[in-house]
Length: 142
Image (cartoon, helix red, strand yellow):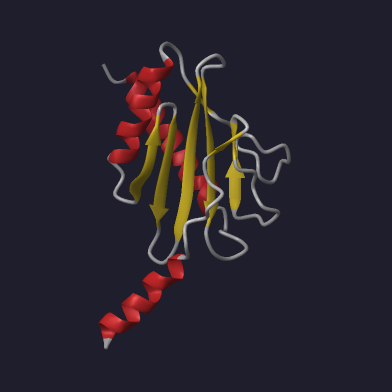
């Protein structure tokens, strides 16, 4: 009986949006709901700073992938040169995170959005800030 209940909760994760990926050189825009953050958003409510790095962009992107691979809540969904898509899980919910390398500006654009619900109570923002700290710390390790 408990297994059936758990299966019902897993169903709460929702379906992966079909519109994720690179569109005209950028990531998908956030919806109007507050459960999404993006470094390419123009409004304060959705905007989050991109990840910045010095040196080689490809090396920085490898470092980011390593950081994400070490997280117990992260599952890689898609990898292309300069683009990563991950699922980030909490107990009941799944968020879709994307990372897009901009070699010229030495930044990695970031986006994370909840699949379900209206508000995420700041979870997408706080988790991306946690990933930012891990990315910066990994860059300081010899």
